[in-house]
Amino acid sequence: MNPIQINDPSGIVPCWCLSKGMAGMISQMTGLAQAVGLPYECKSTRLGFPWRWVPMALIPRSSGSLSDPSLIATDEPPQLILSCGRHGVIPALALKRRFGSRTLTVQIQDPKVDPSLFDIVVVPEHDYLRGKNVFLTTGAIHHITSARLEEARRASIAKELSPAGQTVVPVLIGGPNGYYSFSKSDVRRFFDKLNILGETHHMRLVVLPSNRTPAELCTELARTFGEKHYVWNREGTNPYLSALSLASHVIVTGDSVSMITEAAATGKPVFVETLTERSRAVRFRRFHESFQQKGITREFTGRLTDWTYRIPNDTPRVAHLIQERIGCHEHAVTRAA
Image (cartoon, rainbow, N blue to C red; front, side, top):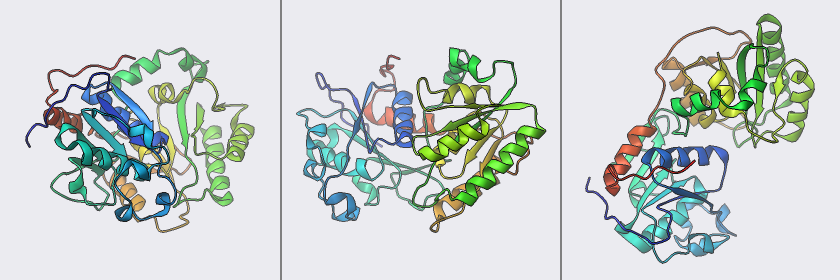
């Protein structure tokens, strides 16, 4: 591949991250931007009416398709555009259409349009998309590295997670989506297994709801586990990285590829809580089968066992490819913390 033409836009942040703004999407884009080594800016680019309900192939590739076109208004392009999800595709293509080879476009996840419209498309191997510029990864790319885990282990919040030095088992909770409803029976079964685990193992659960976790489920988590274990109330410092850094094992609900892949960044046994499908979750099934076959995850049954696996870590590989394309392999700027 030929290196892309380098531009030097005065006052323009070199990397833009475009998405709807969901945590899993931001984790993938910022993790990749950090690995590339360019300063970045995240923009919440949402499709406007009526385009948010229209098939991707029919949406005009212009800023006018956005609810706020000013978000991508610029006279000079960023060197690198990372987009993720449906709401990132159109603004990325609008900028590519305007600036051509002056910017490199990298789409994370299946864009649901011709992948050749982007310079690079990054998708997990369990997805169906293939193409000359499509690069496959094991699970999702993300921002978690061994260095960040070690830093999180020394953070003050880490002491709150295990004040008496107990073994820490993070429990990562997602929420309803198009494929899983988190039915009452699912939640009850999950709670029963967690209670059994708490009674049969000397450890402390660190229960971490996400932005997608319904408020009523958060309340029930606190009521059920808050007395003996740690349940984050989604206020103040997020203990997510510190919890992962201290983990002996990790338990994750099966509704998020990103959460499961991030849990696997620890190298510790990852247990997945199986959820009832509200619609056919074919790609999720392929993902879960892939991670089980690779020995990364096992189904959560209420008991903890130990095993080892090769940590999936494709972010540096994708970052190196981008560095070669934009010619910044030796000139990357590390983003200030």
